[in-house]
Length: 242
Image (cartoon, rainbow, N blue to C red; front, side, top):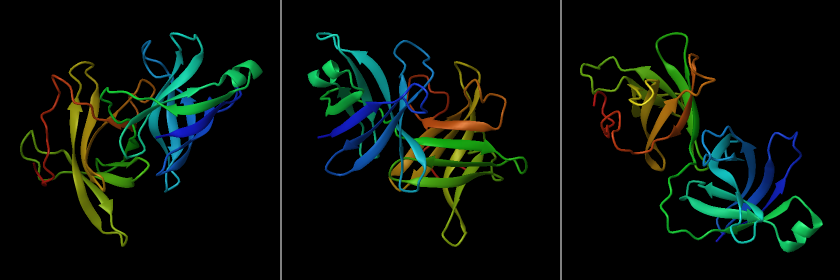
């Protein structure tokens, strides 16, 4: 079960809400940061926290909602700190509403619906030389800095375009995955598909550019969502050329 508090901040603050969420396994400080809505049901906020490495990571999304029976506003959150996704609501007590405070209480939401994890954060940046990329991928349980190095052994279209490498404590390169350049069938935009072996298992993510990033050198890493008509076949091996 989960508990916590959420407080609405001043309109000029960087975060719209700040708070804490608790369980028997963790106590995490969170922020809700406003994001651009792409549709009516798009999230209103990104839920962020700071992991053990001191990196701010996105651990979920949140929506402004209104109760169907009460008409009272509340905040619905979908969160994953690396232990599996869960849903909570931030609601105001009758006393808080009457006092017109900005304080909310976080309560668990019971749902039978399947949810996709939204806990991955990361970035990929094209380097000026050597056709390489530098990046990181992180959640609340791991934090990997990596390089994408061009695969000199690529001989077939299905072979990876890049190998993904991290450094050992002594600086030795370690192969932890593969990456492919791809193009969206829907938008025609280029992106990078990555398969990374993390401490939590194999991770599929895409590195994409939003409107502000397009044409530049920076990509945002987002969770991979399996869908019909996937642009690229399922590349599951971590071998050098397959």
